[in-house]
Picture 1 (cartoon, rainbow, N blue to C red):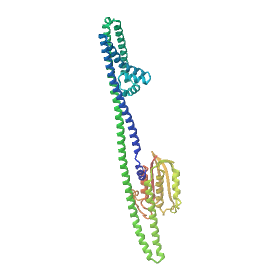
Picture 2: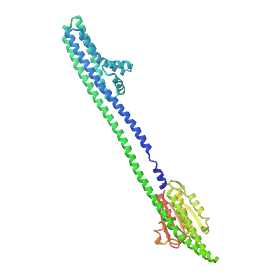
Picture 3: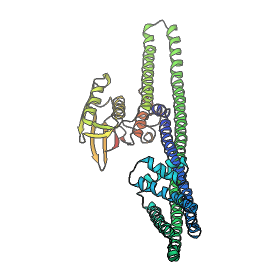
Picture 4: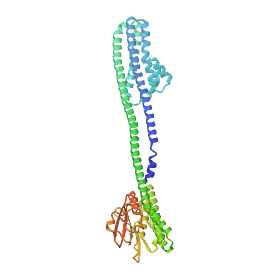
Length: 463
């Protein structure tokens, strides 16, 4: 990826992803907290309801005992009124579990002295959690308590019947024992209901707390991750901008440095030509001017090529080497300076997975370099491109029988602006462009050369 495209990509940070994630997490958090409050409110209502249930049952028992001792009908009425409180809760439970009408459920809870504003939450809780294993014990205790309330009403009916018949004295002890036993067991069931429901409330509260904690950690994690991404991308952006500025500075320096001397030289030649009247003596000046302009044209073209290479994004695909090599040869073999050079290609490996544009830049520069530095003293001039594989690598050799490279120059030829000889032929950028392109392809380049015999540049790529 080029620095230009990387900078462009860095401008669009994934803010929308963070916002969606936070929004989604916040909605879940709101929903969880809503149902947390709803659940806790319903649990509180049931525990308060159990207090009314227990108080109603105990007040009913006391009224029944007072009725036995005084046989005053007012105590019987008090018993009926008080026993109606747990009976109302029983009606609500049975109706709700059997899918009965909500109006009956509502009337039952109201009869049980439950607050009318709590009935909706109480109904929701029983419907939502009735099938959960942890609700089994509270519901069982409630059901057994209702059975004991029914049993207490039967005992009360026996007491009333004995009083009306005048036989209470014969059965008083037996009825008191039964009533006392009933009250003891009912108290145990009422306590069991309260304790088990409290345990369920604590367990649900723990679950909801963990859910809240997870969602909050998720939000914090997303924000932290986004902050880290922003910092990393900002650092990458700064690095990209720094690199781009260095490239601009280097190119500006190169252009000013490489153009200043030729321009001064051209101005000097123009001044000489203006003072020279002999046309024959003008020809050498004009020839030098032409060569200088040709060299500067090549320099500008290669600077443009270097700039383009730096901006190109890396796009790997399967490259047909036969087609690419043939295209490179056809591009160069009709050039005037290549008219006496024989081109050949031997394709041992036909495909490679790489960036075709950068590979074409590399081969174009290597072939152009081979043409530029051919040996004019040799009768047969040749450039050959071979492709083959070695281990897990694909190798492309560009071989010529040109002038070769001095041993002392081999380590320097890939440096920017380095030229060993024939400076009028080169700009010192061609092999530097090759090195930069191959670096981006994660490949390598090797050179073998014998002075006076020729050179082989080997491009080494991953398969």
